[in-house]
Length: 265
Image 1: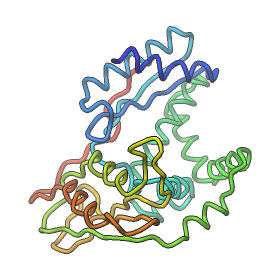
Image 2: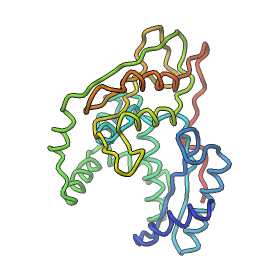
Image 3: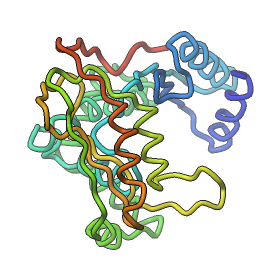
């Protein structure tokens, strides 16, 4: 029910008091809205509702058929976000697989600043890139963590603890044409990265690290992904078989479009 979804989302956002709202409405296998049409409908309803409440608002409909970046989990996704805030990741010194995600984040940030300050989007986009390049975005993130009582040193210590790992490999040669985001997410859930029931314990180190991306050329034995968990190795092989089903390998390289499908404002 789109009206109930809108009510749930907007009630929290409006209560926070923000004067400008930008929504990321995803569609695809890894999203709640599986097709673009339903995502468009939700995005339009969110924007209309926010504007009716006197807020500036816009939405981007974005692609979620494949996982974003290379990390799926808790600790590994937080670390991926930290890497993206580092200057080196922006200039290509880090994994180039992160570049599309960085560009997506910059576009959302630029749109928020553009609406809030009533400035041209090209101007605010360059401003956001500059904040990444000069390290001020990373410093602001660190300050926010400290203000909330967080401890990045403790996080880094947790991140260094050993995990049980299992790597899956390509069973044939060709190009990676698809990576089903929902199947990858369900594998991460089975490993302990999420809860199937309210009382389930989360393993913060559990998750999946992708070693191949859509468009990559692979041969038999090429690593596709690594499964991780820290509690015990039980279930790794079974989950590995499920994860292998998330990868589609074809004979021709796929056409990859932008993660941003459209803007609704």
